[in-house]
Image (cartoon, rainbow, N blue to C red; front, side, top):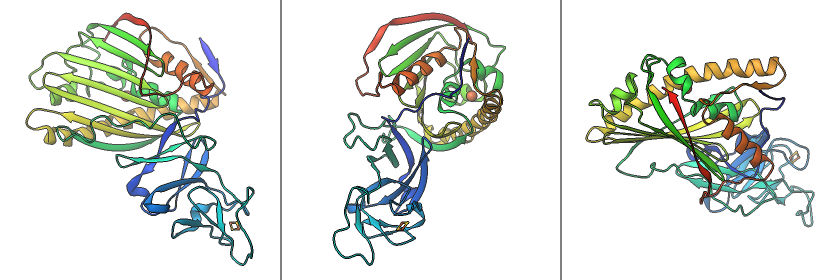
Length: 352
Ligand code: FES
Ligand SMILES: [Fe+2]
């Protein structure tokens, strides 16, 4: 049994989605990542900038100001800052305005696939890796549907929930697994330096609505669950000729507030677009059941003043996720694009 009084340390050397590009447009908009208030706005050449949402002058949030040209202007005395956070204009002041004290912290930003990613370490202007890409979002042979949801839970609890198999038959009974099915399957768990993957071998077609939607005629199933640092969960199914990947990139807004940006990409023979229309309402139904349970979990953790976990082998990825997050918070594991395997795959049997 393990006990902790903190819901996982903060991983700051990492990219998180701050908003969708559509939401920012010109800005300014306020957002929050890791309990840090940020302001997003469109700076030079239309590029989105992220600054700490606090004017260097008298602490007023810059997000209540406005964008003037390429700069953001504070709503109180009109100080103006560039995308680099340097103060460029102080009304009524003669002489130079730039100076170390008159500067706000600026964070690296990437705009990619319609999302605005922010690197949460302002001391690192050139991060050594790029943000996660949703693998099939740009592919014409896939129908993709995007959705987001706010959970009242830690990023760790939310990640574990998305990748947790045993609760699916129980909490979502009938939607995509039935507890009555109970087939013995082999799970192979492969650890990597920045991720962990569980491969489910010999799994029959999932029961419930999902299985019927994806493989009306049955067939063999291949299924993988993956966690990638700092906060991405992937659930992948190959059923007959169809292929489904649900990627969830999570943003820790605060210790018990997590925003999920998910993309479900489906390749399905002939009527993929039609089927993918059902995916979103189906996913939201599942997500609402999860969110309710995660809220209960968070309330209990708060009431008892900390987390306490007892686990078994069928909590396949939970312990690995926690270990990777803790290593990453200590700077010992970093997200990368070239994951190196760590050791041989572990094998276990579970009933699903
Ligand atoms: S508080 Fe921002 S300009 Fe004075
Ligand atoms: Fe769930």
